[in-house]
Image (cartoon, rainbow, N blue to C red; front, side):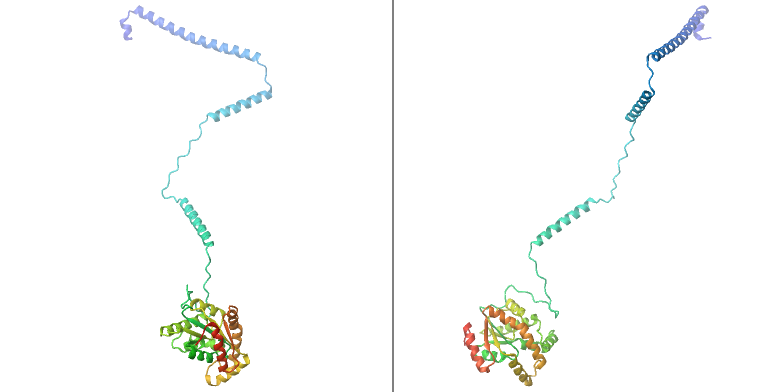
Length: 344
């Protein structure tokens, strides 16, 4: 027995149980009744709707169904949750970066273009020329070694056998000139022990060719320097047989000393050939033979005569007829050089 029932009179307990049971049955009946009423009302509402609403056509039903389907799918898409974003990429400290290389290349290209534009506006320097003999061209000087105000240089030109040596000897005796023969200097150089140009000079002289300009100009400059340092008070030079070519003349005047004028002894080729063959009987020179003489004539006409023509256009040529006797030629020489201020 329930503990509470023990303290309550039996009759009162029965009444309490009956009331509770009746209340429970009434509550259950009420719930069933409410459910039935609701079901009935729903059926009546469905009947009314069915009789009042016109039948939809199949096409309208299809359109409505499609619209509902679209709305449903749109609703689902609108409210569907998007996929979560990917996790952020972790930076690798060892990953190779390319932008520094791009910056370096851009800066280098810009600098190169700027340098090229600057160099385009600069005067170009002509390349150094090398002589066919293999000798490098002598470096140019800002000014000649000797000033024409202090040193007098006269070029003495004429064909082989024109008598240049004889007339130079007379001028040295009477005027105090120092006679420098380019041919004599070259022959002395070829015979000098240990000369690096000996064989080259020997071949050029034998074949009637012109010795490279750098060798001849340097030998002449050395000889002039030695003569001046030895105490020659006159500082006057006769350079015999030079220049043989136009470039020799220009180079000498550029680096050594400008010439005052050219003393040119004009003589026919036949007379020069006769004199050379006669001289060859006693001179012992290897170039005093008919083959070398012909080559020397041809070289003089082709290379040395343009030098005479160049200086003649500048008004710096003294021309003397050399077919007469040596004494008469010398008298004519003294008369002509006096026009340039050369006096005894």
